[in-house]
Length: 531
Image (tube, rainbow, N blue to C red; front, side, top):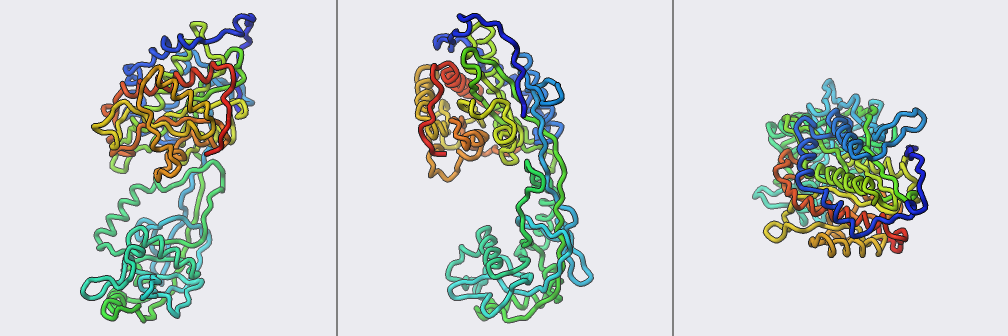
């Protein structure tokens, strides 16, 4: 558990009861400027931050920059329990799951992961395991076509063709073609094979040999992106059934045959319109070892102590990590995602610090939380909320989370450049929603768009940023978001594309909302339950 070192304050009764008047809010909100937002973002989204991927030197360099800004603005640091060292960094360990020995054997040949095959999903077979291999045509069970008819595949490795069976004239044999092609086809074929008891599933790529080699090369270059990070050691939930994508040459080896005989079996289906009757079979052995390594990373936290209600805390949050460097060396600078939210937190922290220095500090304490690991699964905020809150969660009044602001999304192009998606404000507290609406009406006059607040919205944005780790604990939240765009998770997400005046208005709206929450007489009521 992390705790704050709070200085002994000899406060008079008058000081203890001091209020931060609403009419003072504008004075401090005006310290949040487009120029300052840009100044900070040009540092955090520069190439030398190397995309701020969790656990990398670039992420740690960004953490040090954020910590320095907190120090320069007189925010209080945290203390790591037990060692007496002060600082703004909240260190924690993640566990990276990687492949160890991973191969497929058939006869006297051994095929390697990313050299000869790729997988869809994970499996864990730390000991080499042997299976009988059978050819199962296209691996489809349809109204008028069934590759599984009179076939027992329980405990066996099945080899099936990608795509769907077609007649000689090119028309489909199937009643429903959409179910068995593309990504949906992969999923349905794998599910069916598992339901039938298959022990391993090998899908033969329909790509040309050159295209398949290119796919292997691309996946090899992106291998690091497929390594998973988690908060718990050994917590990976994987089974023993793998889904492998292989070339026809590999498939022939698994079936102890030649490529031309495999091709003939497929052509038989095209000629007859019926499943292949061939009895191609063989032996295969698989080893798929999962390994784990520790990754050290850090959240960055700054604190401003309140006055008469200092035991209660309002959190303003963002994530400062991003997705790193592409295999071709292009840096994903993440200016919008979420450099924009991070610099907004810095500016809001400065505004509250200026208020405190002027004797108009907030009644409730303010905690400024910039987290890492968001791109890996909201891990930094999960660590804070579930494992090591700096202030007890029962004393946490609200979380205002900022992610991807200062860009006009495709839905608003040519329509509005003065809007913000407001998500979650009414989910747990009707008072919070009212405060948000009134702050905007009085101070910022932005268009508050509630599209993504609809629980039926297919994007499910409410669950996709760090506020959710507070909402699941019944802590009221608001998520501020300007929407998706073509540069999302691309090297083109650069500073030059940020509308800093839009980012300024959004940050000021967050400030005004936080100001009200921090200074009102009563704590926010939690009166609804819609997370």
